[in-house]
Amino acid sequence: KKYQEESFERRRLYNEVIELKGNIRVFCRCRPLNQVEIDNGSNCVVEFDPSQDNELYIISSDSSKKQFRFNHVFRPEDNQEAVFAQTKPVVTSVLDGYNVCIFAYGQTGTGKTFTMEGTPENRGVNYRTLEELFRISHERSGVMRYELFVSMLEVYNEKIRDLLLENSNQPPKKLEIKQAAEGTQEVPGLIEARVYGIEEAWGLLKSGSRARSVGSTSANELSSRSHCLLRVTVKGESLIDGQKTRSHLWLVDLAGSERVGKIEVEGERLKESQFINKSLSALGDVISALASKTGHVPYRNSKLTHMLQSSLGGDCKTLMFVQISPSAADLGESLCSLNFATRVRGIESGPARKQA
Ligand code: ADP
Image (cartoon, rainbow, N blue to C red; front, side, top):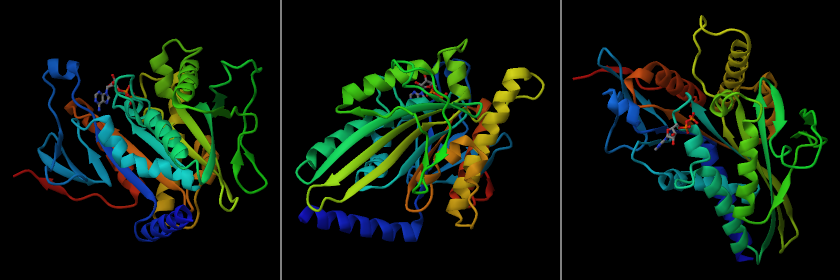
């Protein structure tokens, strides 16, 4: 009874917050300078205001400063715990029946995979999220029964590939997005593996990650050219009133957003980058349409947005990490990413200011 009241209260409060602030959040994360950049004596072009945790400044070569403001800004010294502390309320709301999408956007090498997947020493959002979902579902086992499932897929050149299929005994399948009866989007045939604990789930996802690089000359190359999507499906049943929920949490490591020079690129690479540009701008268009609450939301312009349609908009929660490099050499790309993220948020960034 108490749990149910609390749950209703949480929902009510949350809806109130949505009304006021919208349900799209943008976090910016700036990685540290890496060893090569330090050895080369690279300049850092990103500045932070010590008293503000939601803004940063980019210093251009003419010394002008441009301010950017997001819901939160993570600095190079902020660790994975700090990032997860801000992310946790969004991801765990999938247990209350919300659909949630988290994206990592940015130039290759800025830490998208570090933020989402992390490393064995520095676990990222994906691992910490699963761990937390198992922990909370265990904690609530007296009032709720939860079942967790994971799927993992890749979108490369507008084709969907099931990353859990490689390690199953099933034959290859052509995956397409279908409109389900209740108006949601489904990918029939996509493997949904029931998982019971973090180590089991993580083992499965590791094997999915390995499948990502199959068939490419360089693992890193393909992973930066494709979108990798981890989907956690939560089925919940209240032991008090029998009410059932089914919700999705999508954790998306997007393809690198860098623009590739027109001259050096041809053939396969050109085709790849056209697909990437198209899908990333389609994602930007969808989120900014949702943020600005303009009528039409163009979900159908890419496989990515079409597949995520029922998890974007409405009372779904969306969080985008815009990842940047602090190095002067990446200034152009960092500005592009920050401008993209600002547009997505539906709020204009601050005016350019001359440095004193
Ligand atoms: P992307 O996925 O955007 O291509 P990666 O996640 O592969 O980038 O990051 C590139 C490199 O930088 C990796 O070696 C990663 O471990 C390191 N890195 C990225 N972000 C951070 C960070 N915040 N702190 C420490 N190392 C980082």
